[in-house]
Length: 397
Picture 1: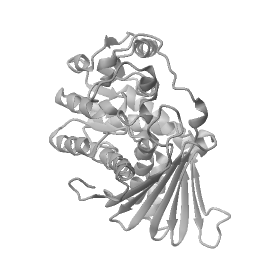
Picture 2: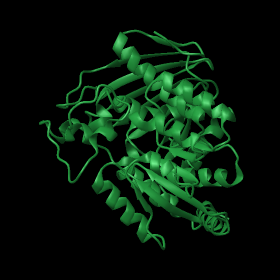
Picture 3: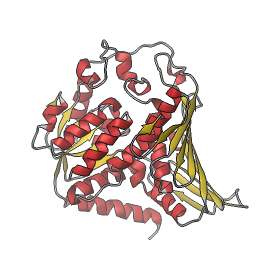
């Protein structure tokens, strides 16, 4: 059976197995663009029903409820406070896709309510939040999956096997980059809302609360009170990929350098280099530049694993190995059949399988924290202008 036929057959078997699986009722907390998209991926499981949707921004709530209702026989319940959704006994699992500043508290509250959790990355905003979450994970029987889809992605699992097999020799450095551009998207600090927003509830754990500001609501990822900037947003994915490919543990130290922010209203830089040192005797170097030219999405991110026998290049959809002495023609070449979007399908499937079997998913919280921690240390390095260490218990500044 060739690879294409195998994947098609595999997809058919997954659908058949799901149709016979135990039903799952899902609650969605945070119904923005990403949350609504991932919700539709969950709905590909024939035995899953979206039982409730919660959001504090009315247009998001209305759109997600309408979208969910089109794929099932009944519309989901509507909630405007996530604690009310968690109190709903009919909900078995929750998808948390809110802004980053809410992740840690919502995960804790969902676990306390007895729900299984799929939470988008980054898992948390601070090392202290991560340490607390790891302690709770040790004590809970609930299933937790962090939305780092490379952990379930066939292409990355193939890459991990290549490294483990010794094909590359000793890898002392991994070089990664992610290129895009948001600097050219506009200069004025403007934004608008399309409907009612519960601003106080949206701000939640962030202190101090500020006056309602549509710009913050639209651009929270690049505002330091609410998130870690583009280095944290994309770096969590990239460093998790490095950790997977290299079978790496927590970093020993992280050092970062950055340019100044160039987008009006942003206080986090768009061009950053972070270098992480690992006890496995290698360093991971990640360069993110959102002041570059725009690439097609399949080409905007790449990882180079520099071994002393060969180099492996693995991006969103391709993995190639170049042996020493014959760099022009790859000795090994893999290309995903279904594109990078398939990684999210695989990751959701893994979570739902684990909800049913109670097995450990591919991206539990300890791995989610490991990836988030590198970026938190990078931001601390920028703040303090020095190398930041991790002693296994906490950050040493």
